[in-house]
Image 1 (spheres, rainbow, N blue to C red):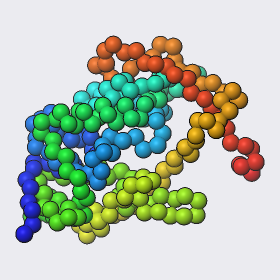
Image 2 (cartoon, one colour):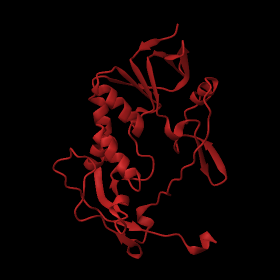
Image 3 (tube, rainbow, N blue to C red):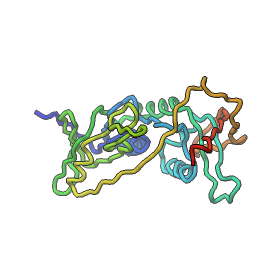
Image 4 (cartoon, one colour):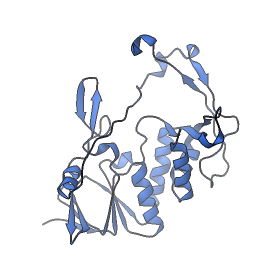
Length: 252
């Protein structure tokens, strides 16, 4: 016999978008199942420890105005702030923060844990059931059926994800984490089309192997501007970054 659970909404994926969706639903007291392959990875920053940047910085501020958590989490965990493109007109200025990835993740996790209307479920959605043209259930890989009237897919790079390392391809959402498989095929059966986007990730370097004195110092702004309009007692650490460049031989 299938184990059936009932929620008003199901959010599939607990990265940046999934967390924002679940917390907004919680604010409206909507019973929500937040489904994630790994509960320890909720709100995890994948690779680059930066929030914002060109075009993205404005989006973070818009999320904050709409009641989202990203700006608040950034201001809580930030190491450095910088307004990019300041040599150009103000219309293209863009805020960026370098953050402590683990502290950011901890802040997000506490918010999810304290949300009364969110239930975190470990597992993987592999099929979507439709009744009379409306979403009715999310089917889990372990056979559970989660009944719902709203299903929000925030699977990110995990959806049939592929990781490329040199000439090698690995089925994964992130390095060391399984891809989400099954949802794409379910969507295709419902008439959706599937494509693929590519993103890159910087190499991880052991700090003890770097000659820091030979790198260019990249300091943050002396007067930092927070991402969230609600942030108080704002005192970022303003830890400097360092710039490094590849050899010209690589680009021949």
